[in-house]
Length: 309
Image (cartoon, rainbow, N blue to C red; front, side, top):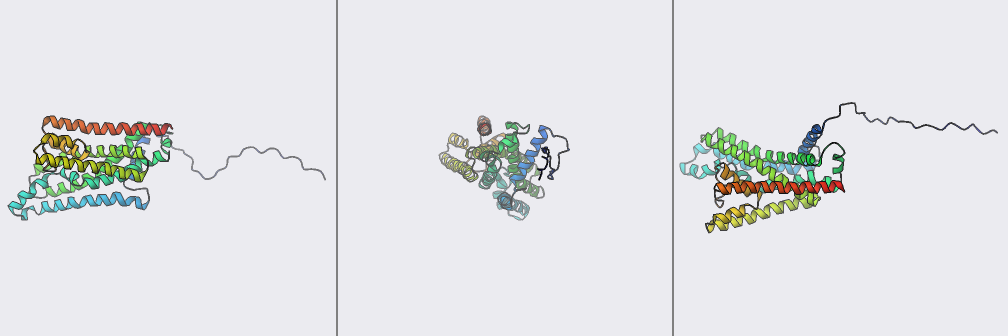
């Protein structure tokens, strides 16, 4: 029996396995950065993630609405109160930037819970290098992540403030004073959101573990806040304004509160926080800049080092 003739060698074949081909226009670097910003902002509120990832950000946002609604209700009931009650409540009801200072624990929890989502996971699992496979620089990556976290922090504080301000506009109060205080508070909230986003992002990038990063951010901010409060209480009892101002430099909440108070002639959130003069106002502005630039430098250096390994 004769052997069958040898079949010719088969050539390579391209198989269609169902992937949709890309037929669109390649987007610019700006479009890539914008997409990263939108994705990061969605992740800050758990959108596009698992169900349990939505619990913490929306719970904190809801809890921040509670004191704003209470203050709004008090404003609406102001006409029904006695003159003595109005005098006791009027200063707190017009002190808009006191809101983020009074609720700093909730704001800290939000920053601590969401910063690792944007900065820790990519560094820990080395997926950050995939972002740089596209024409996106490390600086642009950091800026888009920071912009998203800053926007989220600003939103969860500014929305309750706006509800409070809207109630004031419908009450029988000095609308001009409330408007000035509200606008000053919005500027302060924007600065505070940027500082908290940068600091919590830096801590998350250093630790790279989500649970450890959350704990580290909360401990760092709340511990320094407690120390600053104790120092300012001691300074208030001894009438030592300089000690109070120096202590305020070591926490973002007090730094921004003192800067807003001095720059926009606003009341301070606490009686133990003295109103700064011109020189100290400039000092608090420089301190806020140091908090921002120092944290941003460490964050950028850590990301560059991780991406180069």
